[in-house]
Image 1 (tube, rainbow, N blue to C red):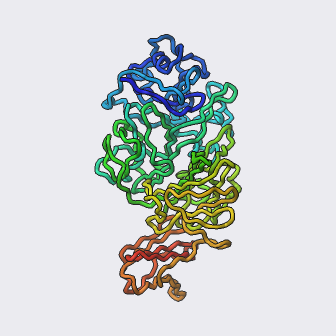
Image 2 (image 1 turned 30 degrees about the vertical axis):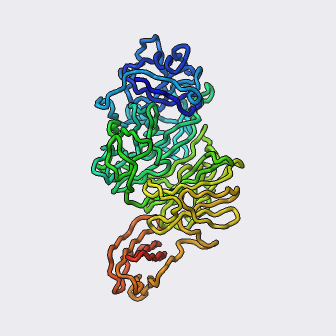
Image 3 (image 1 turned 90 degrees about the vertical axis):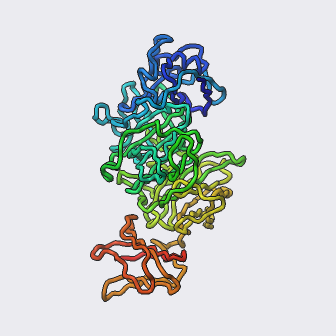
Length: 549
């Protein structure tokens, strides 16, 4: 079969897969329009493949047209290759690659993701700020870009990274490779990886003999994990890897400890195949032709802010994600949905648009603002309700901002602003005006001090969660009994009560409470803490307040 190939240029090396069995490296070179075979040197004439255990791109040394650069013999069908672009431009000319496609019954289509950055199980010592060198004399700081570990060069930076190529001539859909519990359809893809994040559609790949290989962060997805499933956040709609495309996956061993017996490290590419160009919904049964329809139930909410120039061309984007189990501010828990904008030689990149780490009370946290910038920023939807995420516009070319809003990875309908909780996302302009944001809404950009909010921005100087009440329901404190009691609106018949602590941890949920009598809240005594109480009636009205113990 013949496969046409044309893609955005990734820079000095084109990241790609070779979906053909018994395909020699020399034939790849000829199909890509090179006048001769790739060289064995470490330069733009080379053809490399990713060694996940040593975190290094190794170079194939072609000896002849029958060189053993045979994907089915030496490297395997899921190998992540990097082809030097000397002599061809991937973005301007279409090439035809020929060969015999792999069959989806091949047992080599299932790979085990182990020992990433740990040859023989021994972790690599990257050195202080990545200054140690790999086997090719390149500093790790110039070679590794780990956007999922935002504090640069922590103990887990660069570890558990796995890079693979799509072995098929169909797309592969990675949206639901976390716990199967997150999929509500009857037929699942069978993959249950402890995945922290995925990066795909790579760009900005450069190579220099002096500094090594560097990349910049492009399309990125992180995952919100719980016992009920794993929901993706970020660039979720296009988390479909096309034929000859490559992908970068980071796992988090702490998830395996937190949720024992839930995950498997086997990734089966056979059950990821998909003809459609967009990811399937969690409620859609797995099949190669599964439609993108339906919506899963859950609480993951996100807004994408897309920077456009005066011709409506995208310059960049950033994401703000909230959930009941997300962490506000600097997160050293080991489980996070955040992803940085990337690093070059240990210096945080500064794209045209990004957010910065926030204080738990709202606004920028200067301790980390100079350490990393964020592509995906998370905060807890309870303790960060109505508080400010600092938004940075870093280019005068930005003319407009467009907004993309999702809940459980599914887009809201056009012009809709309200989420299932009744809350909305907001933006605060540089002049202090607040604008409620709707799906596909576009605003003129205003450079300066901007802020993103989940929930209407609280008044200047206010801290904590404002009391929100569209009924006569109220929570009263009885000092004698040391109880908080709910006095319900007389027009309510039933109500649901949810209580969180200020870290976002769920404390208590009560459903279908009859409102004909008062209700004593089940809040722990003897522990000094603050709690968020959310009370929702069967008629859609809601009451929120913060209580102190």
